[in-house]
Length: 168
Image (cartoon, rainbow, N blue to C red; front, side):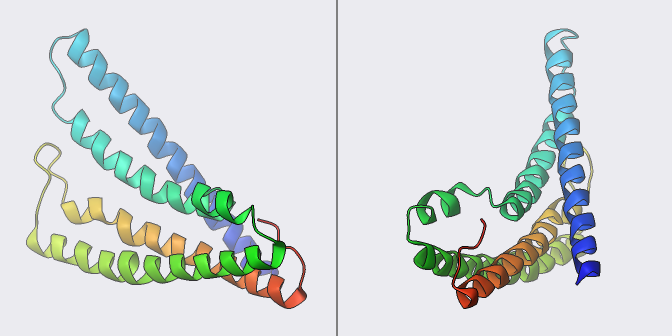
């Protein structure tokens, strides 16, 4: 069990660092866009597309980070007002739904989407990136969401069995 905790910590930290780096690059990209447009009066043609793609990656991977930290507003706000046992049961149902959606829609559907885009060879207009690589954010974030939702589900089930409050 200690090995699994260590692996999870490494995955957690790696995901957080990746999101932080993507946000930093996104900020620099947007600053460069503003500088080239307003100061140089010759806007960069690629920065807007890069910002869009980075925002997609940040949003999807950031959702996984938020779920891992228990920071999703929708889960926290409503369940925090319930009695302990009802709250834990509700959270378990929510985590089950998130895990199912993340796996079947984001992982399975995302892999299908990525493979279709790579097979078609569709490229982005400005950066000439294969769109399959851009859409890779969907199954990757889906895998992290599935992992974190499954962990949350197991923790809630254990909490129901022990009949005591589970830390959010």
